[in-house]
Length: 227
Image 1 (cartoon, helix red, strand yellow):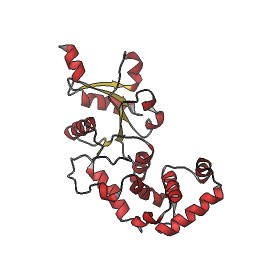
Image 2 (tube, helix red, strand yellow):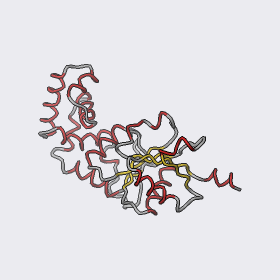
Image 3 (tube, one colour):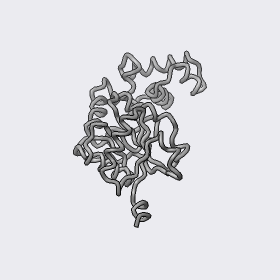
Image 4 (cartoon, helix red, strand yellow):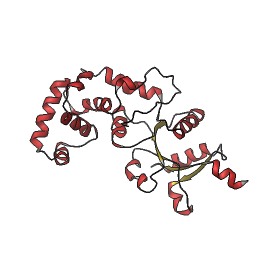
């Protein structure tokens, strides 16, 4: 009987930078012990043959490359109050299956985990609408259609936090060429600083027409193939 329960449970590794938040998340999920088996990252070496189905991370622990050890696990970002720009940059640079706020009520949190289990990408609709509205309100937001392939690459790299020198090295061009590209990009989309390019980058990953802004709050977002 015990082995049957183990097969039904979802293994969740909680790897957040705050031990207090890890413990709170574990306590939350322990409300359903027959559904979730949770392990906090600091205890992982004491758990034999633990293979997580899902890994909860935050912005600080996300770069640790968990998928190199558990390539089949689904990464879920726990949003501890990130800005829209930070979330966009993370979506661009990491393969996430969901973004869930620490303020999410348990029933909605559970629904998010279930949706992710079925292959959907979960972004709470309040956050999704904020991301979409930031694009709509952005000056000449749709002007990205006039950008060349190289210019789009540069926009994505800028949104990922790379400096001009790093972009130049990554693309095999000079730093001066990067600056020239950026000047043209700024003119085309009518912006004056690098941070204003961040909302634009999301449109290259998830076209505005496919972001489904009319979904009710509790519904997940079905992923576009490029995410």
